[in-house]
Image 1 (tube, rainbow, N blue to C red):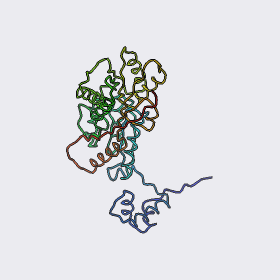
Image 2: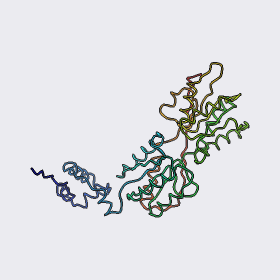
Image 3: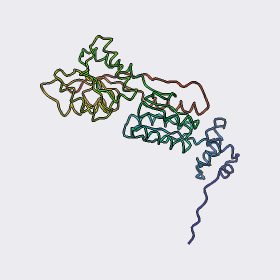
Image 4: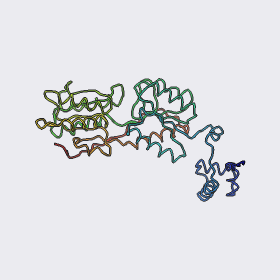
Length: 338
């Protein structure tokens, strides 16, 4: 027995169904605001009734636009990156764009390979959270005339639009809040110093100590890799000091989690457990108990502004590249674990 499959409905069938031209149908699908609301509703109803699905690849060949944006992140398991992705996607969806996310595995070579893949697929723009401070490979986007926007970090050898937060002042004000509570011995657990965000947070810590005439003590400053295991290990090293700090700044939420895990597993009745300052305030942050001061980043807003910036470039606006820094907010909690 031969089964005949009904061919997919065409643009002409949709146009005939609602009594408009194929050009009008195309404009409605592409969210052209010149089409009246009444006509748009009629066309979209016909699209739904017929089950019409425009072929994005065929449309891309005709318009030279795929209406897709690539997003390269250092790792998928980082909730911070995925929340940025949510902000990007929500803004792109308003203009009919699709987001394609790639994992660079925190590796510059993988990042370069993912960028080449996205460019070969014909994306209209790329947003990147760089895995290191080196970015010469990102020039591949320039060679294809594809706009590229950096998020969260910048690189040393490639200049383009970037959406960041004010890491220095965010850290400064968090340390300042700890000093206002009477703390003098404030430790610092930083991230990978190859990343600009890590260096900026150290700069904010150092500046706060200088401004309040607190001596910088090398034995209170440790560097990890922005992952939970390093927060756990380095908190242990800080507490092993003869005079451990009264308060410890953690440079991101994962090292914060690791430090809190160590404190929960190694609480000693005869030794005062230090308070924690966390850079990144997540939904569960206040439940960890040890943290009293946090730096809240406007995470989804970062994504939305990155999306708006890439769309602005796609529209052909050729103003000089710029770095936008968003303000952070200090959040304080009552301590739950003494």
